[in-house]
Image (cartoon, rainbow, N blue to C red; front, side, top):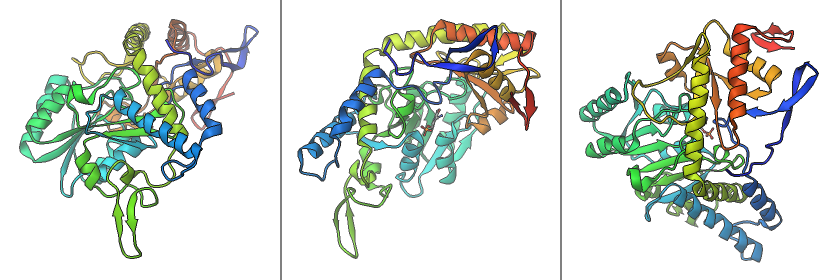
Length: 412
Ligand code: PMP
């Protein structure tokens, strides 16, 4: 759909099999980080000789950098359907964005969060004394539990995932927004996993804030964004204290800028913001086709995995629809860490194993650890089929190469 850098990467097999020493990398870990778009790499390469300090410099290069930085802010806002009065704060990543927002929630405001969240959308709220609601077995029951909770206490903010980093599922965001707004609460959506797979719009869903990460959106590390309502961000404590965030400073007193500058003290990540802005624009152009690609490959992956004896695909809700292509699973009697290492060593496949920064989610489902395969722009049917074949062979035949278990890990 869009060219990516590094798509011809080959990876060595730890033990050559039938004379094959390396394979094209089957990257099934897009949910952790996605490779950069070729368009992003080109834009970054073009900008590298030109960057200079933004906002404060009068020189030509400072003007160019400032324009690139501010154009990226606009592109990011457009990507998430920001309303005209929403603020786009450029951050480091989703974790940064959510911590920033947690610091701007008005004093004493109650926050409600579900127990299915990634730690990035749980711990900042937990630390601020939020109530954690247990997700129920179905979406309908979970929405009812949310409604009941909103009726019992005066919540000001509900934090929800746009798509789970474990199962790809979500609650219907517009419905959560309607419930929350009826109870006078705002909604923040953690779109770290949603935005790379499906279009999201603040204006269309009515959500108040959204957080995302560039490195999951086909841009490199170091830039993310928090986008949303101005008032809390204008009134909140500046995220960092320092230059660029202030209007005037005396020895005894500092006057702070409004958002977004208020929360962007220090020299900003111009190149990272540029990369994220370009990625956002490129992804918007292929959004529908990307969503189709995602649905088709997820179905293929889930169907293939569930045919293997002992494999169980994790689901949060029996009635959820349209999960994005992030699929976690367990294999009865098998250690996920060993299986993940085997998939890399013998099949050149990259997956994630463990507890996925979502410990309460796994604990509530009695799962100690699992494997996660996630799909993106560069994933082909062959990658999905290779994973299904690899897991199946492991279960039915066992590994072909000789490894030993050292400290619980599979090592040559
Ligand atoms: N939320 C979700 C749903 C995620 O998947 C992740 C990353 N795994 C994060 C938040 C945190 O993103 P980052 O590490 O870029 O801050």
